[in-house]
Image 1 (cartoon, rainbow over the protein chains, first blue to last red):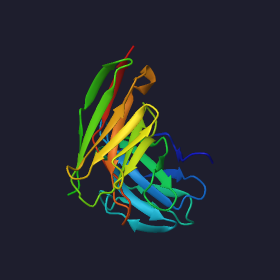
Image 2 (tube, each protein chain N blue to C red; image 1 turned 90 degrees about the vertical axis):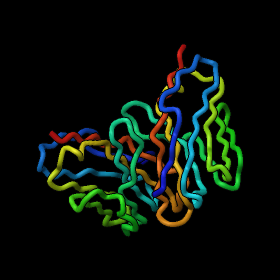
Image 3 (cartoon, each protein chain N blue to C red; image 1 turned 180 degrees about the vertical axis):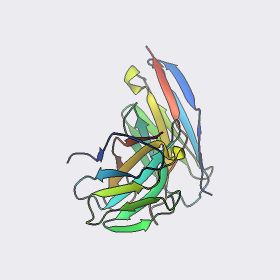
Length: 113
Length: 113
């Protein structure tokens, strides 16, 4: 597609539920990133994939967060046993090889009640 | 750890005036500096970037300057228009490793008609 597509756009989860957020990167983009953006803050790095390999997961806040990209295209960010502090916008970005000029999706706004 | 400070947090200018947003980074290995514009409910959109081997870059009404010695970089918007109103984020990264961006905390720009 022409841009990075994320779904769902909005997700409300009860505390303790598991959620899965999907990212469809730009076709052919090797690099894929997940960021978390709290209200009024800048995005914070969660994890990075190069093709199907997860090369950096240093930003994942806890072992409740898990990301995968099994075929090197679509990626899923899963959050288990959601907590209120997980409420944020989750942004996905993709780029050709290298750090230059990520393209971000519109994000998934997760609200945990 | 790595940090990017951004000022001011809010900025109001009259239409047609210039706006300047400043960022400071801590990691001397940083060598790529993108700027993103984020409108309400949307993902960040890349508007301009600069690499460390360049001191200034311009694209129509937008320019970015970089002072590597002082670890400062700035965004300049001239002849501001109401559609420039948005939140602007600076970021810094290195072109080695996992390319994660460290974002500033954002500047909310309001252009008053």
